[in-house]
Image 1 (cartoon, rainbow, N blue to C red):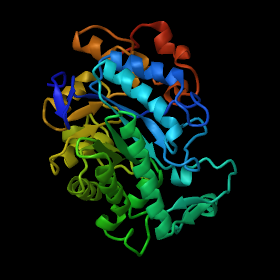
Image 2 (image 1 turned 180 degrees about the horizontal axis):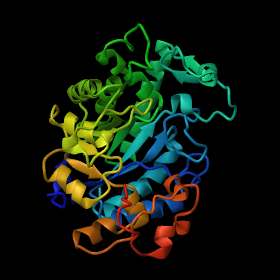
Image 3 (image 1 turned 90 degrees about the horizontal axis):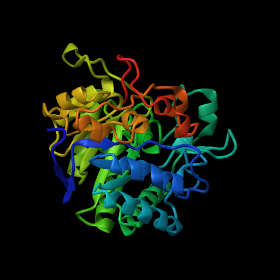
Length: 363
């Protein structure tokens, strides 16, 4: 079943395999789409992924997670995303773009320049406290509009949808967690209030981009507990979300994995549990590793999709080769490639062009 077709908001996906958003550091300047990035996504699309989620793109030039991150805060970027959409669609692969505000992780050029957060957090490290600046309600609504404007630009570029980045300690993830959101107004307190910035963005995007535009979110399945992750999933579904991508939250929270799912990590386990509570599709990501594990998830109805990053980074043709039962280059999980600080041409696994020793999974 993992290699069977799937229809998502009118798009026909070749299979249930997702290439998740993975930032390629150092591949662009000034937020612009580079030819190197376009060729990267061309190869991933040719390799057989069912859905591509393009890497995080900043909705504001002051909210970048790296100086070489892609941007979508200006109409000047639309042409680059038109090329991205064309490349993926030429191979029959829908593409959504992850849109992001880095929040406390924003690159400001100065180490102690204040960065926006929902609220001050007691007990935070001294440096982080110095950087934290609590947002006013008017500023929050402005950020909602920035996400909406970014989505509309991507709609104009022909991209199939967006994924809101609500994970990994970036701004939206700080709002979602009761640990990092101590506000006392409509944007803090209950799960509904903590999710308000996200649900407002979803509703605004739907109004601007129409019913067929895919709206997804990546967030932590434990934010900070599994019960919170489930509650948020139900709120997102009620707010018009089309697809959920489970990862880690504001502080990398994890929950114990029961013996029944011992082959999976906390992220995948929380995706399995969240899938039980919503009717919209759920993506399991973060070290799914092997196609056998993907089949357990998808063929067993535990999740709708399995995401693989390192597998396709080590071998762009991993999906096609795996479906045909052919050997592929296996990821060595070396730090240089993992964090994209060097060219993929330097990847030892790709240079060797052979399988690594058994027991070291890909992603």
